[in-house]
Length: 428
Image 1 (cartoon, rainbow, N blue to C red):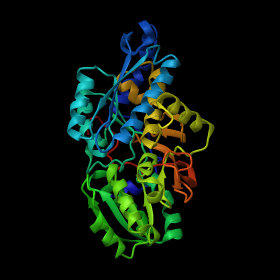
Image 2 (image 1 turned 60 degrees about the vertical axis):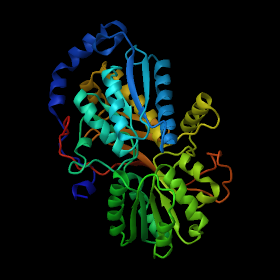
Image 3 (image 1 turned 120 degrees about the horizontal axis):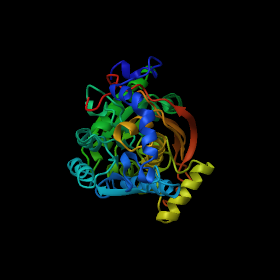
Image 4 (image 1 turned 135 degrees about the vertical axis):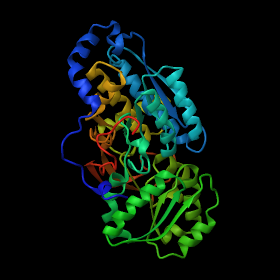
């Protein structure tokens, strides 16, 4: 990780890109002209605003995909109930990406070229986001990306340093860094890192290691496991024989469930503290109470958050999708993304790509997890951060309200500045 990636938010000169320069002169005339269009829509269209949603509705990440879809659909229902976007209804076109990056490419092309969507929302993993990025760049469409991710990096992932991508999920400097001091002081400073073998776990751990080193801690083991692994016996043996205090997990999908159950069956939960930055509600439900008790999890959103706004949000999810339908961080992020996109489009009077970019930059919203803001300079979100633990008396896998006890939270955490060349540019 470069030094710049660890720097605090810049307070230097604001970004003024070629795009922004072109918009500045035309903004007043554009809004005036749009006001006279039939239906009030951008570009003079009286048809619906179309959004293509790319969700993993089958495969290893199905549970995330369902929450993903629910969050965005619920947001768009609320937007339509309140007059739509510039007087136009929003039509949501959902495509199953099948937990497969190559399918993401195919579906992104489909919703843009065949369905003529105005904006694309979704994808789940970093690999699937990176598969969609070249498509939206070629087609000049905004991508609203909801997932917790490793952060933007010009050197390793140049496609993410792109005006067309807006990141609504939490990054390690918000998800893990705020709780490093608590975890090391309470449970020890020797970490054993176990993650799935792809982009997000590797770069999340890279950033966490820097925070750990600053606290005088050590990484005593680090392993990356192929997706789809079901037997973790050899990994667990190495953990058992290590000097670790904390097992730090970045496993995903069904793998994190299998690992946790085997971790518990070996009694390792009695020897080590398990802290994961992935096992939100659906993964914890899949693990079950015995394999989850005592586990720490950190995210920007949990269904446990006891505020009027979040309780109303969860009630709407259950009313729409059934009592067993839960919500998680990516669903909440898709909900925020939907509303913030609509607010931006209504403010600028258009769903044209350049106008949406201008409208989203600096956009704030009060979402289920609290107040959030899309930072203008690098298209990352300022978010709350919560540290929770599964209590010993949690016994019903369907009891989402009793699943987590909030240990602490911070209302607003700024992300580390993206390691990108500024200003951002399309396709850079």
